[in-house]
Image (cartoon, rainbow, N blue to C red; front, side):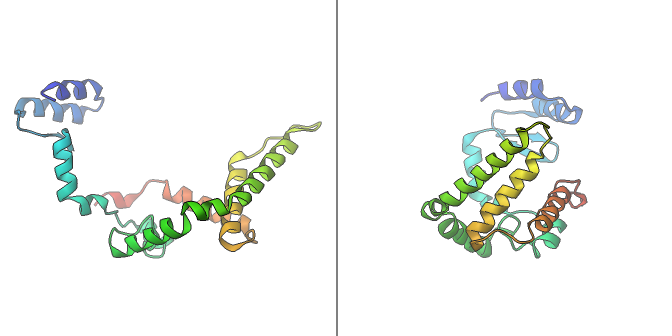
Length: 185
């Protein structure tokens, strides 16, 4: 790639700290330097170096941070999305993708998905036809449809306490997407 990556990255940079780092890297760059430093992190700039990094640091890169939100909401990070990489995660992955999400298993619930989607479309069309047009909360309807599909596929029937579950799910998503103090030591 030569020295062109420094010029190209510098032209894309809007943050002063990054442009300073890139200016410093231009001053110290040698043909044998395979990375660009951005703040405390190195950005790998060659395919060979990326392959080497993935080979030697695969476990570190595959691991997830244990955040307080995962410990509180997901039973001490025991779900597939927040559990650290290891034997337990591999076992969860096998169960999830080889048993629950296999093509044959997913195809078996096609009629459930089609029925729930047609109910949603009917509900939307009934809300928009008539003498008085009313606003609809499409996000709420989509979450409700996804909940109905999931509960029918998993348990064979719709969730009785769907409204309570969806409101707690909404609260969980709001909390999970808010500022996380755990990111900073």
